[in-house]
Image (tube, rainbow, N blue to C red; front, side):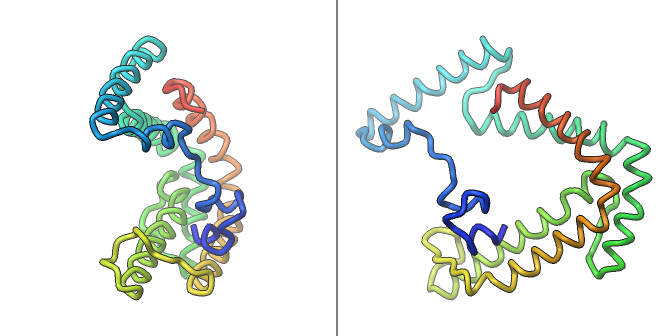
Length: 195
């Protein structure tokens, strides 16, 4: 999470410089208000028609696509990963190791353990953005906040340490978990026509 602030020009850090822009955005922003409204109506109808024809699904927007695909992913992860006896066996020592290193582990089911660090640092990022916004005279939201590397450095260092400890504690777990997760992810992405 915090690497995007520390290294904003590095595409590997997934920072603002590497975010994907829809090539239609520039064209849409040049449209007048009524033209933009008409474009959005046509785009939604086109999206619905294409997804119905190609995917056999009723999807009318990116939001619907991501909502439906995320729900499908969660459901399949829960059945296939949280119900896997080998992963359940590997999850307990993984969680115990993290706890022994001082980390809070709220659940030891496989998907919760695999998501623990990401979810923790997503929350820390939101909190950091709100704090920085308030310091800069904003309303605590994310818009217009200047996030400086020197302010993020301690959180970035903690995140790196957490990630290394996570990998050390979870090496056996992840070697079993990751291929199964990737198979589920690939199938869901194919089902929903996602790259």
